[in-house]
Image (cartoon, rainbow, N blue to C red):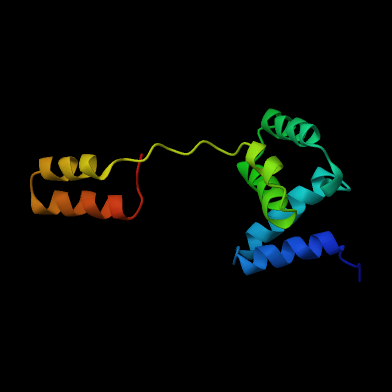
Length: 124
């Protein structure tokens, strides 16, 4: 049985404490293992080049999330964490806009369907 490095063990423990799904944990470990033999010793510029490589390969944003988790949580390197760009966050709809939309809908059934879809997070 292979031994686990202290750094990998620390990352696994950090993910376990944060209750990440086992598949997410496996994905993050894989992404960091592919990243480098010594990811804790890389400069921000090396991380940035790798991130550009991922974008060029059209890789999953999950790999960028793994980098952010590793540097921000496991290593506690907040400066590197802040500079690793994740996916863009969608604009949030203001509650007044949602209320106006629901008020404009005629029929109880239609209003309930839209309110349920919004509450379930089905936003476009």
